[in-house]
Length: 145
Image (cartoon, rainbow, N blue to C red):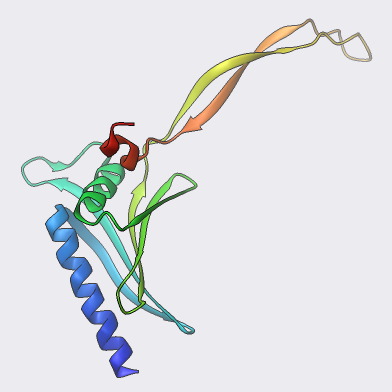
């Protein structure tokens, strides 16, 4: 058990150095022992040393970490940005950088057919906007896609 704890500590130390190299600030770092899985969770934010927190901080933090370690896997879930990886010793870790910059964009319209009068007044044919939620992906921005 002590060897596993020490191994997780070494991975956490490596992740701390990786975050520093990437220019992101570690807000919270926790080593979790859940059943047989040993996870390290790192919450980070992007700051500019002169001006404080940067615009789209979650995406900038993820982008900086991806540049520093391209082996990380980007995961977007419910507007949140995660980067996941596994150490050489099989210890799983996850960076969390916050809510990504998602926007609701109208991508078109659809025609709603007219409805005959029933108990409620008749509804004429009308156009209804179609929306999508789009989240820019730092990997695509890095690759120029």
